Image (cartoon, rainbow, N blue to C red; front, side, top):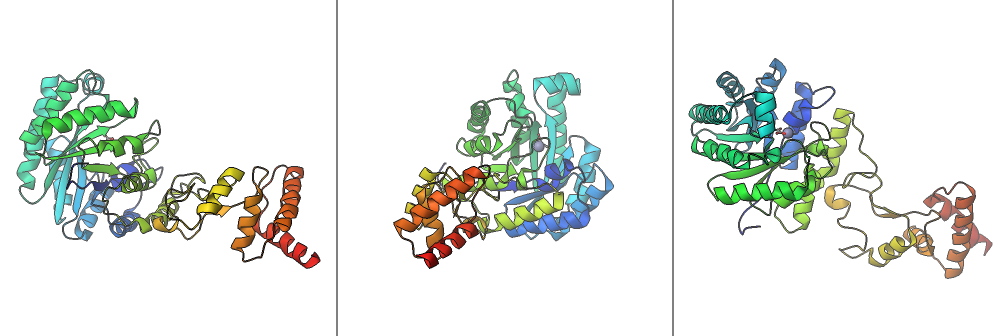
Length: 395
Ligand code: KIV
Ligand code: ZN
């Protein structure tokens, strides 16, 4: 990353995340999510799509008023003057408003969805961005998103021209979306690099990726190394279809690679849990960072490495600690028929029991045989501890 450039985490949960929920949030729920985002200390929040319905309008207005001074508050609008006016009506209550305009730029969408010529598309972008600039004035920012940019292979030069025209018309931020993830991350990252190189430091280059193929985090993280300085993300990876880029994964990946990210990492886990309650969408056991089972070790080789590096900052099989992301659990070693002697020793020692190699051997055989007999089930810590105590009394 270029010296002195900080990556901004722009959250879109309340807009892109909310629009994809089976039951979109009401005003009180939106307020609660907004407050969670403030506590998490994201760099900016997109609060809604006010021209889409009255609830969104009221929510945008309320959250705009609720926003702390200096925090960019965005609201999305389609590229037409009346919706832009309506958006501004709700958004202008924010101390630092950001009017966000979206219009498609890929050849496919222009031909099959818009039924317009490229010239008409360009005229619309220029007209609406300039209009937004004129009403926002110096009070706030204007962001332009070229929807389906990631699909604009055949007309890449035209898509680039759309972004350049939006800058000339007054956009402060250009947002490059991978609206539908269809291809390799490298292809999108390369397109972002070409646009960012062309634009230089004129305005902020932002990316917004979706997770249709499960590569949104990787794609967005790499974009930070080719010129993007804003990444649009969502809590719990909420969003249309397979979701938006996951906030936790993106922020942590960048942090682990030495980038300075301003969020409060210790708020990740409590936030994720609450968002799961507020959406009714459970957190998968194996979900990175927040899944219940991600700090468990069951194979003998891994357990040996974990035991040997337990108290070190870098663990043989641990990339970050549970407490760093606000969890109050810890790395666990549990016993299955895949486990080794080290598992037994680790579990007993962590319970303060004095362990001899003889005891470990006896318990290892007992645990392995019961696990195998009972359908390869996991042997719990409390079973091992009670067997160990029994053995210690017998001995
Ligand atoms: O996915 C998308 O293209 C969007 C835009 C509004 C940025 O959500
Ligand atoms: Zn989106």
